[in-house]
Amino acid sequence: MALLAAAGLGAGTVNAIAGGGSLITFPALIAVGLPPVPANVTNSVAVSPGYVGSVVGSRADLPRERVRALVPVAVLGGFAGCVLLLATPQRAFEVVVPFLVLGAAAVLAFQDRLRRLVGHPKTMAPRRHATALYALVAAGGVYGGYFGAALGVMLVAGLALLLDEPLARINALKNVLSAVIGAATVVAFALFGPVDWVGVAVIAPATLLGGYAGSRLARRLPGAVLKAVIVTAGTVVGLVLLVRAFN
View (cartoon, rainbow, N blue to C red):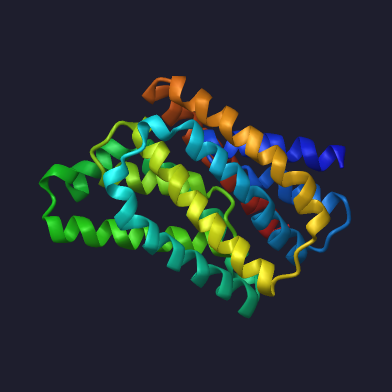
């Protein structure tokens, strides 16, 4: 219980600042004896309250005008990802996930150069911009419902490329989208997944506290520092997943 509580606190903090907290709680659940698939499902349910804490802590920076449009897309994507996890073998996606995470970190690291290639958000046609934004959030929802590790890194990387907003506001939007995707996984896995509810009961409150603390810390970090933290976290998460996938 002490191991799971400490893992939940760390995961909530990391998810609020950068993403990738599941790489703390998922191994902890494996360490206490859960098989991989129940550990993955339990982890998805357990870390979800941490996203709520992140939303509360970053609400001052939240771009509310975008939330109403993007939340339904994120929810549908999250449910689709849950169905994908429960209906298909996990091995294939485990191989793809590390490259997605590393790619997301690279997108955020080279954001300015990529904007020169794809166009600055202010110069994009409204329809093209809206389509790209909805597609990004839907893909993030599917990823979050299926696996979810480094979901925050992937969302921040894509949103920073498509939105002309300060990184603190993008991070706050990421927190909301992560929270609703997490809520979708809770509903789906509670009904149909092999959830270990004892593990959830220990981890969930700790992620809630960690999420609030991490979001408050993220608000105080300069944009360049926050970007460096997210890129570093995403690279580390991607490399860890890569080693795990081919080990």
